[in-house]
Length: 179
Figure: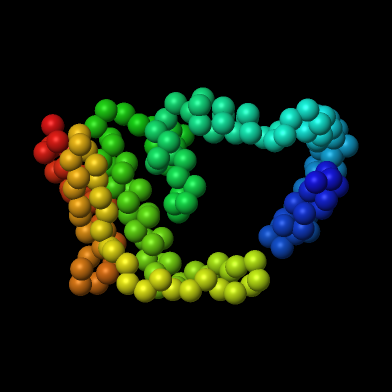
């Protein structure tokens, strides 16, 4: 993709959310980047592309997976509603149940929005909205020391997410049983 096109696409995405002054400042910074560092980086990527089938593969494998020193599942769950990283919540001894309880609450809340069709549906390449799936399970499964545990993801009566404290209690009970 040409650098000019990338810059234009970025400025188009900024325009609706920036004031006139912010937009002009952003445009100035972007144009400076395009003429300087951005140009050198883009030329470097084009050169790298001449000598490899996929210029991103090595970097993706190394930096997204191999050099990562935190748990991949909660930290890099791209399909989830958010990520929890060391910068947002430093891990420490005894924090895993609390950490996972917050994550489960986020996943359950996002899942409820999807199931109630409160979000704009994704569409196929032809523009056809994806259909509702009908009835689905409302539990989650924990694998701990070779044992499987199942627990409700939602309140049975209201079909709302449990509280963070309730998720944490379930997780702590499983943790205790697995010791």
